[in-house]
Length: 264
Image 1 (spheres, rainbow, N blue to C red):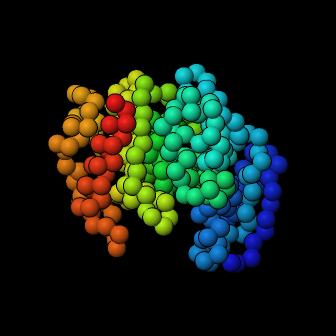
Image 2 (tube, rainbow, N blue to C red):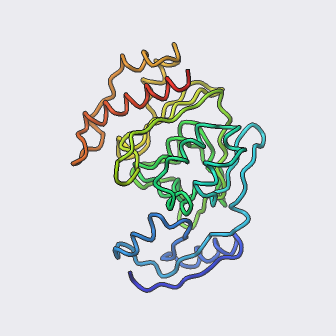
């Protein structure tokens, strides 16, 4: 690990000011990705700006037809919150299966979404529910936020403050976790929203994406049989020692069918 200066921000403004003054500074939330990266000397920031404890990034509430969750909310808080369980049970269930207890008690919603790991769980919920990512500067629609592997619409120094999830009529998430890491080898979030059916796939490709063929099929009938008739193109999916592209395509199809069955 390279040497760096640690700064504990007292307010969101202080944090954003510190980041604005130093292009090499990095924000620190749960640190589930950043800390291992630092240990491996794959990053060399001049400063770490600790965001933990900022009141502006906390809170879980239902407001104006949406479940609004502060970016610093831990996975365990999302999983066990009565507000979340009553509003969007699928989101609480998703959070309860992230990583292990240590990760769930340190990792944060905002950190996971900002990092946009291609196998992370939260991005599928954000995209599947058509959520709004609210930063210190603006609101970003889910369809515009995710831009490929570890890439998002966030600008340098821009921080996620909260995420607003519109309340769906129904929603479910199913994933096949990697047995060691708990990351999704394929995870599918299916939501029946006021605007229609949305199906978001994580883990299978280089980034979270919507499976539009599945959305169109489910719009005609919300049942697993509609998924079984489809084929997910494997050309752009991930391939490694754990599975071929074709395997992940089939796995995503199975997870989609399971999520739809859970809705029924």
